[in-house]
Image (tube, rainbow, N blue to C red; front, side):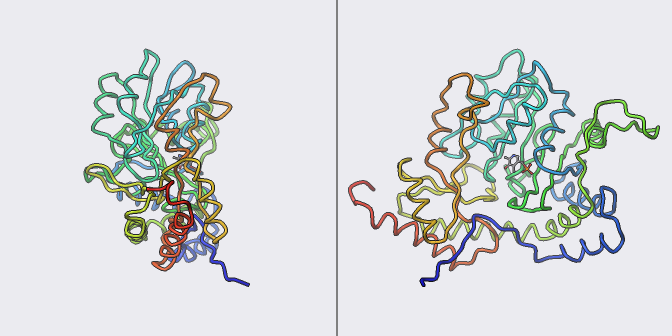
Length: 374
Ligand SMILES: *Cc1c(COP(=O)(O)O)cnc(C)c1O
């Protein structure tokens, strides 16, 4: 039988202090949502980003919900969000009762189109959610002045952009409030987990208040708002702290993987997601566009037979049943969504793995009729 390699799109690297710290939680019985690892993980991430406050939560989706609640967003409000994003960005807006208003993407960076953002602002617009998709920062120099001019809050969804820099500054430090995810395939993981960060003390206090059942400050079992239980456990934070200790290694490994793909695919008909402008693309995912949308799924099947897992780019959310009531076209997002796919992108990939993936990609085109491809 022929040996087929198995290369997933992602798998976490748990080769640091994860086990040691988790055992410490078990040995000391600090396994719930109080404990020293929570404080260490929160302050560690805040320090890494150079941001004043961070509060840990149980996943990236509730981090977004909490951020929106902290800003007081709800029924009757509109929040502008790219249609090309993971579903959670949009769902979190819907949870509050606010209406998500979609914007198109830019063809080169794949990020929110600032001109379309401006066009979508109405008297009801309360906030804009910048999603730094796949680890490429949004064009903050264009977005922030528009938000300021119209008195809008800026939320950054940094679930995919831990370590990404815009003009030398971390994503998550530009807006009023920002969120991270530590799901199993994110740049650092806690299994399930998230974080809300901000420089605004009031917003931070509101997040802590709402994530802990709306408990009043100076009276036990007295609750003054309808809160939530969105807390992270000490065990998750222990894993997170161990992961955070390795962030520089993960990021440089991802940079190397991206450069191997770049080198291997140079001159082919596949377009790698490249950095645009003065930014650091953290390459949460290495993604490519095929020349013609019709080839994308055929190519994905070809790779699957070779043991290589891929993912389609996110389907633009405005095309999904619960958000598609009003017909609208978002030409760039749709074009990217139908042509794009994520390649294996985890830090444990070796040069041989990436060479095998590149060869498998190129062999698809070598077997195809020449006239179809440039
Ligand atoms: C992963 C992700 C989230 C949600 O995070 P979970 O931890 O899975 O809830 C939100 N937004 C984006 C863009 C993501 O990629």
